[in-house]
Amino acid sequence: MTSPADQVKAIALESETTAETPMPATATPTRPNKSVPVAVRHSPDDVAAIEKLAGKLNVPTSSLIRGWIQQGLTAEREGTLESAVDRIAADVQRLREIVA
Image (cartoon, rainbow, N blue to C red; front, side, top):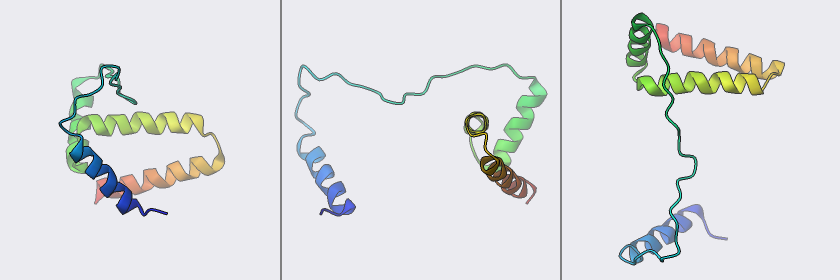
C-alpha cells in the first residue's frame, strides 16, 4: 500500500513531466463545484456592522456572509436536537471569540 506522501510525490512528478505536453484535442476542461455569485441588498448600517465584525474576526466580509448562509442551510437540513445543540455550542464559541 502506498502512503499518502508517496501518492502526492507521484502525482507531482507526473505533473512536472507532462507540464509541456499539450492537452488532447478531445479533452474538455471542467470546473467542478464552481461557486455562483449572488447579490443581496443591505442597509449601509448593516454592511458597516458586517465589515466591522469581519475585520474583528480577521476574515473577508464575503467569507463571513458565506459562512452564515452555510450555517443556515445546514440548520435547515439537520433538524435534530443534537445538531441544534452543536449549533448553539458553535455560536457560543463564536461569541467568545468576538467578545475576547
